[in-house]
Structure formats: C-alpha cells, structure tokens
Image (cartoon, rainbow, N blue to C red; front, side):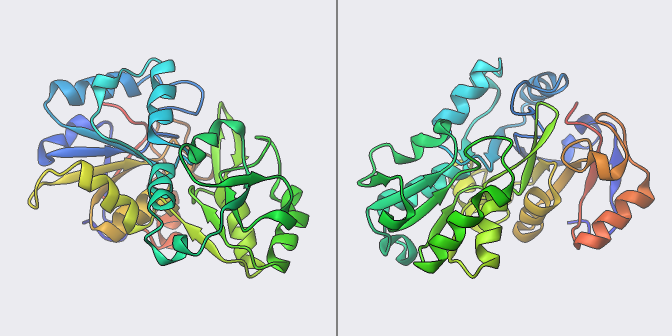
Length: 294
C-alpha cells in the first residue's frame, strides 16, 4: 500500500493491471453518473474482461443489489462484464432480515423511511410496518433525500423530533454527496451525519466500513494471496475504506473531487493540488487516474 503522497499518476489501468489478480469497482462517479455510463467505462470493463481480470462491484447504494444490477442493465452495462455486485443496501438488508446483530435485534417493527421510492426494495420480505409520522416510529431508515434537490435543512425538524424520542437511525449509504447527471446533490450520509451531530444513534453500513469489504470479499473470494485493486472516486469512502482494508486503490480524480482539484474528467490534476487534498484528508492512494479507462 502506497503511503502519503507517494503515488503514481497513470493514464489508464492498462499501465498497471498486470500487477493485480482482480478489481473492485465503485459505481457512481466511476462507472456512471447516476444517469448514464461514462464514455470510457464500458470499454474499460470489457478490456478487463478480455484481459482475464475478474471484476466485482461495491457501491454505497442504499437499495438491494438486484435493483442496482437492473439499473445498470437499463444503462446498457451488460451483466457479463462483472461478477458479484454488492450494494451497501444489501448489507443492511441482510442485517435487518437476520436481526442477530445486537443493534438490529433491538429495532422495533415500526419504521419511518426518509428517501425516494426507488429505495423501497429495502423492505422486501421484512417483518416491518412503515409509518408516516415520527411519533409512531420505533426507528428511522434514511436512504437519501425524499427529493433529489432537498437540502439537509429540510429535515431539521424531523431530526429534532426523532432525537427527542431517541430513535435509532439506519443509514445504508455513508456518502454525503454525489454528482447526478452533472448536478451535486446530497446523499443519505449527509442527513445521518446531521443526526449524529444532534446526538442521534446512527448505524452506518457501506464504505468505508470494513464490514462492507468483508461482505464483498466473501462473494469475491480470490484466495488469501490475491492482489486486489480498488477503483473509486471518493476519498472519504472508497479511499478510506481501501486504506482500512489494506488494499491498493486508484483514485479517479475526475469524479466527486474534480471541481476542487481543478481537473475535469479525463485529465490529471496538478500534483500539488492532489497532494494538498491527500494531506488534508489523511488518505493514501496508490494511483491517480483522470477517468476510469483502460
């Protein structure tokens, strides 16, 4: 694992892929922008396939993995281009179903959900009752804003009401923000982080937690000696999680950090700017690449 600001700037994965046995890809900001695939992503996935490099997907998506796969197929990303696909929502879903973890075991049946309708797959087959009023809830599930363009402040009254009753909150997406079709919008993590500031009890699932990588690697077992490369665009989730797991990581600088690095997708930033960002966040990367490309 390369530490600090000692990393390699590359133009594509083909420059370094011979060192690795398999790749774990982030989705949003790497493969697609929530609406369409980036022009280079499908060719890069096909090139990895042709090179015999297995690919797994690990995404902070607060919904079932099957929903994520279906959405990618709608975007034209063929199912044969990757192996296991793990959404953070699937990790939370499995925990909710089992209720063997002490935190989950204490949850009641009545849940108030904050988030879009597309995330309702989290309730499939669950023994729960969805309520509309925080006064009736035993706990909260936050998968994102109800409207994509809501600010965190929209939920301030709800969060205070939930804290007044000490309701636990499940957040299956630690991301604070994302770029959707060119627009920067908040994610579930921004709402959950505000609840924590208010003193609320939040259970997080997804990157950068070790449990997310453990869940993925159980499905993507390449053996103890396999050399894995993670490709992601977020320092706080993809890179932090890779650092925690001891995995090499290629940072796609043209993703969520493109604006602050002053380098649009497909271009590499000035090393000084990237070094400053890495130092400020305390993260380490193995490679910097302007886009997910071959």
